Image (cartoon, rainbow, N blue to C red; front, side):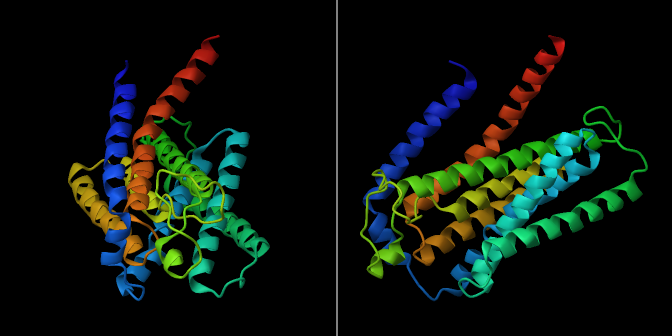
Length: 284
């Protein structure tokens, strides 16, 4: 058994035990901390997810500037549109009345925003670096930073897709919706299968944990230590805000954090394997 497999197995076992213990007290914990008009809760409900999306957009745009392959550039550009469209959806849902922004409007904003960002990144970085660099072979750290951006962007993608799939598949009713009579409570370990409810796991908690991947972009040890402390505080406050507003049970939050941290851990592992696969194909 390899080291990575051992970590995954023991990690899953530990998570399962923790969740089952917390699951017994799910409702009692929510009853204790729920406060619908919590100002702190509403603040982090609005700000909890955008940082990880902004980080993703930054990474794909940075790679877009220094990428030599046209196909990869197009890919980064499209991912930038997806990221900005998703960000617009999140922000419009929080700041605008329901239905104020249609999906088409969000996509248009995403396309225009990505065009502007491409120009800003291209001319801003071109002014700073007079030459184009090939990923991984330049002597000014650009290639290394681009590779770190790849890992960070992959982390964001894994977090988004895994958390969204689990949310849709589990179909668990949120605590506040149960109080409002919009559904019934279900134990976290029993999937309800595509009911249209999205309580399990917490997307905000997953994204807050995923945002820790920003540490891959920082090399200074002192700054890194301070940044990690800030990120831990941000994660705790974001996770607690979901419990405070009744948006999630504690088991939803713990699972969301686990999804985000797993993505942070597995992303560099996957990138190393992808790199080995590409090198082996070139040798053939």
